[in-house]
Image 1 (cartoon, rainbow, N blue to C red):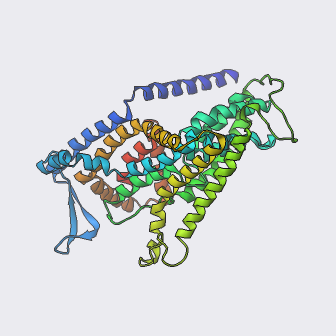
Image 2 (image 1 turned 180 degrees about the horizontal axis):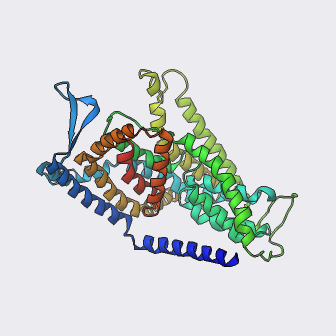
Length: 437
């Protein structure tokens, strides 16, 4: 029996090693997009030569007949001219670019002032021992509001907290990593990732309806449900599967101090007076921003409600203002925290933090340049629309239940995860096909 178990472990190890080796051989995502652009160019030329087309399901041409969508060669004179002349506009007009830059200006202040680290430290340092694992997992999932800061701050911090509680630090690191990475899109609030992805969704939907506006909070029901679903799974796997396989740690005397029964107090995560005061001020600042937004969308004549629009569209200005709202929220909270904690001494510190946040986005700008042109050229070719119409016809003929279709999309996306790690890069590849379909 033990031999069989060892054989299974060896097989699993071999599979994981193969996946790792294969992943390491993949080029940088920037070049993956360049290769995809090359593939789209070739396919568009062949499709145009073959005369591939599809009838639009809702739009009519000038004569009142169903609109015929024809494949366009990206090597035609018009499209080559469009590529070269509109290159700056294509890059600057990439929907996620503006959203990410705006949100990260505020998030950069909140991160570099120490607000995110202090908030996460405070959340996990007073967790009752009986629910330490789910607390770590929940804070890790909520930590994706801080984007990459959760990886840098919370994962090692979870190891310190587990060690302070007399538990194996590797188990804490595993629980935090599962929450931060596996639950990267799970949250009880919308955040920067939603701002990033809904811009791609809006750009993809334009192939069917150029007037359609995406709602940054459109995924809230899903991401909130995933938080509730992932939490017990991470708790069970950590406490029942991972930690029992680890050797018991040698608890360091004096690392754990308890002033209240069953409450963890760790030296590594204890907040000083300035940080504690900063968290309170950040809370007041956040509350004030929320009140301002409520004031702007309550009552007649408020700027965030379009009273002249149909009922289903009246809240569009509010939804579209949430990107600015997150910028102001993060900026106000980070500034308030920094003034109390001592990390912000003048307005020059705020400007420096914003500048550093923009400097960290250098790689994203390069990725956005290639992604923007892939999305634009894919739309110019009409391949996405033709594929979506054809795919919808096949799915309609197959009579697959919606649940089965969604399951297939989830499985396919999970497969893509092995090859494209970036959420924005992945959705930029899948969105132009899946959203219209």
